[in-house]
Length: 358
Image (tube, rainbow, N blue to C red; front, side, top):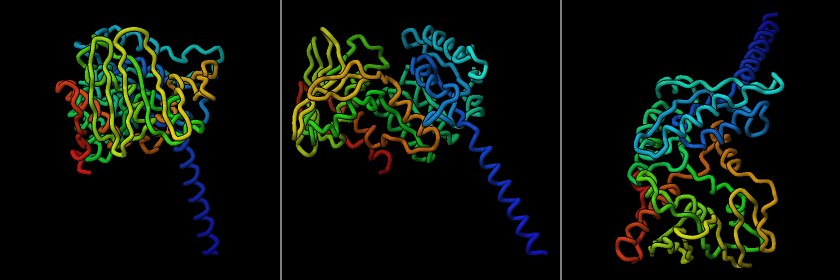
């Protein structure tokens, strides 16, 4: 009888444990937004807060936001109010009441935000603020995604990732271009084969705000590294009123280029050179070309590629971009700036990841 009683007790305990685990598993990962003057705060929340979310977007929800403006960033306050209104109204007046989503709460401090969430996404436009904003988040041990740019300088980028390592808190940043199928799909394109070289082009804002000057080529440089892979050895830069041109040499001898367009029509894409063939890349938001034809009528995914990676990460997945690769991109841009100052001589890349103790 005693043995039977013990067995029944263990079964009952396991049942309660499993029920508790299911209840806990049913609770969504609570996400907080720090800074909302970037449209990304709205764009990604639309994915994460979908009514009756399924698949990768199930089990995660933005619950609170701490609006922060930058007095030095153009239109920061105006943009914040615009996106704040959209966030407060998002999914709040559905035709079917069953589709209602809990409203996002606006809070008045980072401390208050941290109390209400399990993970944080920083969407402040001014990258100069990111180190100060990331510091309390990382010290609190909250998973952190920082919208492009990670920081406005290599020094701040190193400081953020170093603190993430010291606190053992997962943290990453990325341009949405990295996860656009028309770019990422070129690395293993069957008609191109092994990538030997790549010429990327995109916009270069001549009158960029001070906060954006260093990182203005980031979308295109992430595209270049996405297609070519990491392992850059040196960079040279030629600059004129019409374009900013980087020539990038990899350690294995491959060469890629970046053309920052200052005048004329602006597009974001690339030409990829491979062992099997040469092909244009797709364009942002669309898929890879087939027989050299770039698709434009397929499903436009835009922010969705990065939103999928965000959702995986927020629910406990590994950051899809390593600190070493992120810092290599900052080092690439840094070397290009140094080359320009030296009239275009090739400049070896600094290994910024050494500062992390790797």
